[in-house]
Image (tube, helix red, strand yellow):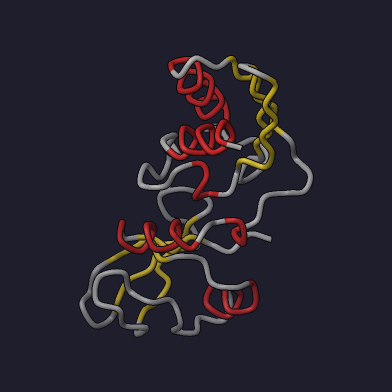
Length: 161
């Protein structure tokens, strides 16, 4: 069990290349870890099929574990599909602190993105007096919002189920 804890600790040091304040563990993309002596088999799930960051993440996992004396094999799995439900509470807080509104649940997400309800909280001042500026933000998994109170723009991480 101590070895698995060490592996998890090492994986927690691997950042998501698109959101560097989140580890791959915070994102919930690590789905399984199997350890056989110094050989570690890791299954990861992309946040969406075809995510260009997966090769980088796989390489980072291998290098991080190699530097700690392990041999890593990384396999991408597509089922079950990744969901924003897998983002940890620590990850959600890190998103907010970084200036990206954490995903709402599926029903609230639709109300914010499709109905224009003012329920996405500004990451700068905390107001929900916000409006969507664009369905797409800096990446396809985010929408661009603006706060009507402090006037600051910010990304909202869309709910994916």
